[in-house]
Each structure stands twice: as structure tokens, then as C-alpha cells.
Amino acid sequence: MTRNRYALSAGFFLATIFSIYFAASSRAQQAQPAPSADLDYQIGAILYQQKAAEYRALTYQAFNLARWQLDTDFDKKNVKKLPKADRKMPRAIVVDIDETVLDNSPANALGVKFRKPFNISDWYVWGEMRKAKPVPGAVDFLNYAVSKGVKIFYVSNRDEVQKQATIDNLKSVGFTDISPENVELRQKDSTKEPRRLAIAAKYRIVMLLGDNLDDFSNVFERKSVIERFSEVDKARELWGKRFIVLPNAMYGTWESAIYNYERLTETQKAERRANALELP
Image (cartoon, rainbow, N blue to C red; front, side, top):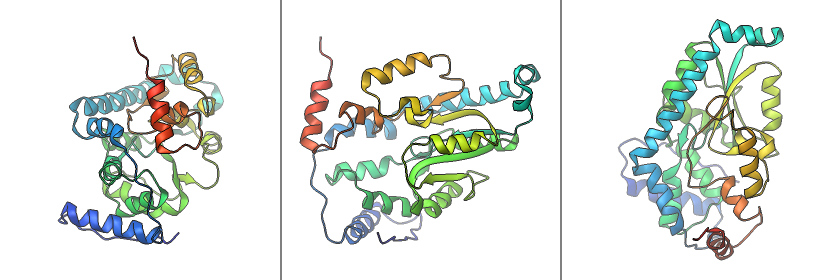
């Protein structure tokens, strides 16, 4: 896959971005057009993320909870409750990137506007733009954690070839302590469990933040809708404490579960979504 780099200034018009985006995408796909798809069902979710003040309130709420929990972890009474081995370990926070600390809704909006379902070529082009904005509250919280001596690990299923662009984007929006060592992208498997375990071998993970259940534990992976509900209920005491969830109605494993993790056409997906609706 040819990787294209763009040096777009802040003064470029949106139309210029559109033309660069899709011209580069076409080159990356070597003139193989993506199938046209009716993605209008995503419009409400994208608009909610971009235009709803309630979405901002939810993200601020999540990061406020995270800060309160971090402050509690530094309380001497809490430290005394920990096993002696854990008391000596440095603290770490594990965060997802997309829709947890970076907002990719413009890329989703372009897909809907031009009726192009998700494809890796367009995703790479969007990443190379380094244009994702921070999720409200994310920069303040994570930089606060860094100021307290906490190591932040950005564990994402972006592909390894996107690493430099991802690092650049994170730095450009204000995150501190960003390096190749703590930005851990996918190399082979999609599961994040091995990366979490490697971090836990050297650090005490105080909390995990993500927009997808798979960001927290492998017990949620590839489970049915009902099983996901059940696992969330089992972990009810961890939500808002060790596990902090960010809202994302645009995409995620929640939708894959509706499709039973099968490869389906857009028409088949639409039928599954319609059949999944609960009616009176």
C-alpha cells in the first residue's frame, strides 16, 4: 500500500481537503472504486458527535470521573490497601485513540457524503492528514495524569504503518509525553490483551479508557449482543472506576455483534439492523 503524506495548512478550504482526500484515495486503491453504499443510517450518530452539546457533556463527564479516580488512587489510604508488590510499581493509564482521545467523525462524514463504506485506503489517507481533533476533555486529563508522574499508553488498533502520522496528530493537538514507545498500534492480532498484559508486567494500570468494550478486557471480545450485556453486568462495579467509557454511536464492536461478526454486504447489514430493532 503506497503511503501518501500531506502537508495541509490550516487555511485550506474544505473543498480542497475533499479533493485531496479522494484523489489520494483513488491512487491508493489503484483506480478500483469502492462500492457505492447507502450509509444514511450513520448520519444521526455523526451529527450527535459533531453537533450535540450532550456529547461534549458526556466526554467531559468521563474525563472528570477519570481525574477523580486518579486523585483517589494517590490517596495514602488507598495505597495502603494495595499488595506490597503493587505499591512499588509505577502507575500507568491505558487509553484507546480513535473516538477516545481523537475525533474521526469528519472521516465518517465524508464516507456518508460520498456513499463510500469504510475501507482501509481512505482510512490511511485520513490518518496521513493528521487532522483529527481531540475529544473534549482528553488533553486536559491526560496531561494532568502525566504531571502526576503517570505513564500513558496509547493502545490502538490503528495499523503500525500509521504510527508516525498518529504520533504527529497526538502531539499537534496538545498531548504530552508522546513517543514510539508508548503509542502501541496493531501489528498482527486485533486483540489488545497481549499489549495490556505487557504493560501490566511493568506498571500498575490504574484505569483504562475506551469507546469499545474490547478496549478494556478480552472477556468482551467476539461475544453476542446478549453475552456483551451479561459481561457488562458482571463488571458493573468497575464502570466509572477502573473502566471509563467514551460515547461512540458511529461504529464499533457493538455493531459487529449485530452482524454476528460476519462479512456482509451493505444490504445484508441493513436487513440485520432492521431485524434487531425492538418493537412494542
